[in-house]
Image 1 (cartoon, helix red, strand yellow):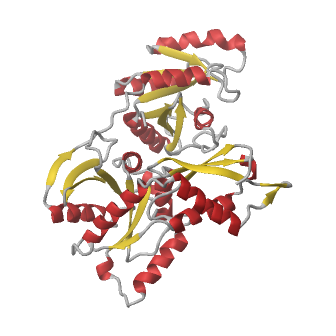
Image 2: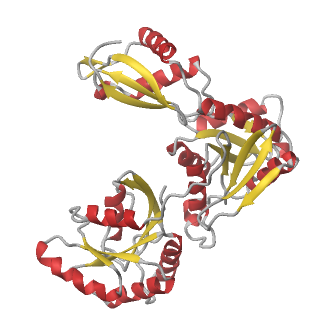
Length: 438
């Protein structure tokens, strides 16, 4: 991930339309009413094989209107977080006093910015962009978010200004895991218990405000990096809590880790926010472990643990491959079981299956359960091979990608999991068309 791009500007210049155009989906609500986008909205995208995050913000207004103070605070925070800032203006209206107010905020930040002169739907408006150079900026690009005009040029300029991707270098085989979850579930206590137990800290590496903190340690000759993060609050609170960079810190940690450890509070019911946080890690195809913390104060009997595991697998759909570990960070109980599980999951995340054995397993699966007929045609799998690890990626050569139903792909995944130990590891499939049958 190269960095963060913030889209800012006064109301109704098309910021959310540009955001949606860049990330390729309608995540932001677009409406003519002022103040629709009050909070920062985050998305991920890529251009020229370069991935980066995009932040959409509410329209900045200095006059006293409903939510204007909150919107301005959020936009200011987005500017602070950003590596590249895109100032969106309306090419049809020209420069307004509200545009000048936004420029003053940008100049105060001392950050460079690109001006995107939006609503350039007619070539006759091309000359209108030149007046925006009076802001003192280096680059003004005419665009139309509605019709996609100039978006490629804008993205080229964004990529040119993003910082070079910098990864912390760790010795090969070092296991990087992050702890993510809601506030007050015990992530920091669990980190301290992990580090305190091993007593072999190599170094503490403080990151920037956008990064989590990496702490390296060694256990039985194996090197680890634990990445601690701030708690991710539910949406109503994430964006209003301006002193926390919790969302970006967590996303940065997930991007850089091998294994995402999702920490739950065993004394509380599993919430929608817990599932949302787990979904972030799932989207990044990271290995997963679910930790139920504070287990020492849970009223339990012989069957309590198994019941909770069943509840976790019911609540966290499509994550039944993730093992569940019970700990008490406060009393330092069962922390060693988490570290044991992290090592096991890491090995599974890196597991490579021999091609001949893989094809034997899939052949048996197809013989037991034939692919369904789709649009009058039956799927035929001619060959399979594993192309990558972290996550384990399997290429299936089929007669038609369109005939592969999701449910049957799920069946093949379960067949592979039954044959090989991929506990904690996601499995990725790539379909390629090839004539022939299995």
